Length: 83
Image (cartoon, rainbow, N blue to C red; front, side, top):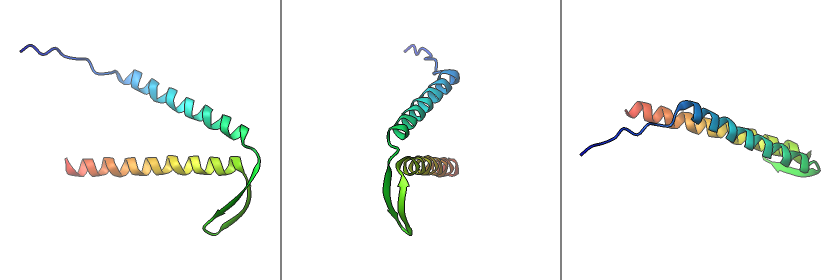
């Protein structure tokens, strides 16, 4: 059986796709922030008050990014320790 080598996707195109994806998400987040500038009631743990909605959105986005990185780090660490 003749197996032909299939070239893997280059790291340059993977890096470009990552940058484009990040740019699309950032643009969408900026558009959402610009369109949602009104105040909103916030009640979370010991925090109560009225904040601009864009602040709540930015805090949620940053928290999601940090959580994603922490989980990714934990999974990579677990995989490295097993193998």
